[in-house]
Amino acid sequence: MRVSANNSGQPCNTGKSSPVAKASVRTAKESSALKLTLRTAEGDTVEISLDAQNLRRIERGSARGREGRVSQTSDTQSNSLTASVNVTGDLSDAELQDIQALLQSLSGGETPQAGQGELDTISAYQYSYQHTREVSQSTVQLYG
Image (cartoon, rainbow, N blue to C red; front, side):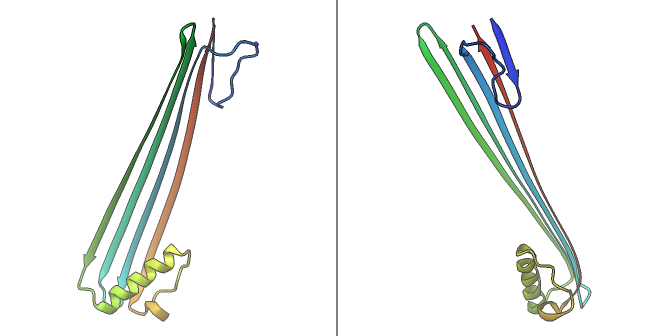
């Protein structure tokens, strides 16, 4: 009896027999983090942060014998989102509109200049965004 395992998803068996049992696990994790800190022309400060995570795990297994074949698959997924907003001061309607315009610009990939154009009530802002994705897969095969 031989056991074959690798993390590339490709069998290591060099013989002609097919596996009698096989199991694989694939895990994918994505996370995103956004942080925006800004100051209005009147001196109010706003801090906005968002953290999102997605985890997916797929497990598969199969075996065969004299009596037949059996297989099983499990697929689980979890998502989470955490949001935080902290405001120091009283925001006017114009400042709220400028903050909304800034968020829309940043989500579209633009980095507008504070204190100019549509953002004349925002004196400064700092923005960061990070996105990561990790994928792993492993496979084990049993030959008999």
